[in-house]
Length: 335
Image (cartoon, rainbow, N blue to C red; front, side, top):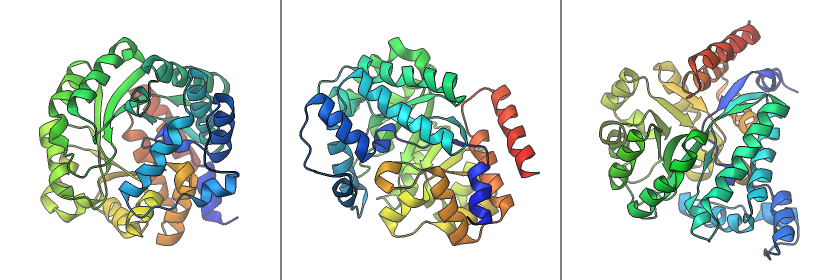
């Protein structure tokens, strides 16, 4: 094992850009398909993995939504979330803010309550059994209507204490941030934190980031690599101390590059960038693998890696007390 890999594996860290549905590993997919009596067009784990061939966001989403067909009952969502929490614990992730996509399930007839209750039970058990703390972020699907997003927001209100924030994901083409301005304004009124995907190399990426910041009022940008194309935007992101939750291996699937140079540039410019795994079952790389590939490809120093870990806690929506404890863990380890 390389020294870099060993350092990363034991480094305390947080993950803030992780889609629970994107952690559905092939073995669990087979288990749930059998349990729920759902036929899937694969006969082995290897066949499932071989089907994960993507060349852009749109082609990825086809397989991503298809895979969700096996998620039906509350227990399915518990098993999905708990599997990720165990994996996160094994990678020394001590805090996480995972996303979930309720519209991808309610549109199939799965009750909102079944989705969120299954995930919440796993959160409670993960903290009790593994010591990993988590807060849940509900994402709206941007290729569905704003009316559907508002209905989903309304459905979430009885579970407000279980959900810390809202985000926006799925296909960005023709679905700019402004489409959901009223939904996010209502979410803010309800006390939710706000984040939003601004995916890599989409149409009008820079404009979308500006709108997310100025018109929506987000507290974080998910992805956001294209912010480097505009010096004024860089300055505004720094002025507002906004975090950018970047996913290197995911970027490689979309752009052919880990965006190593861009991430290094963000660090050099003092931007609050942090590393995440996005949809690790489909990208076949969890957080540690993302960090190792990034560090080895870009010859990152231990201090750069440590700063990425610091940023992951500084950007989180946990309590200031918890942030202090986590940051102390990072400093003790790096020392």
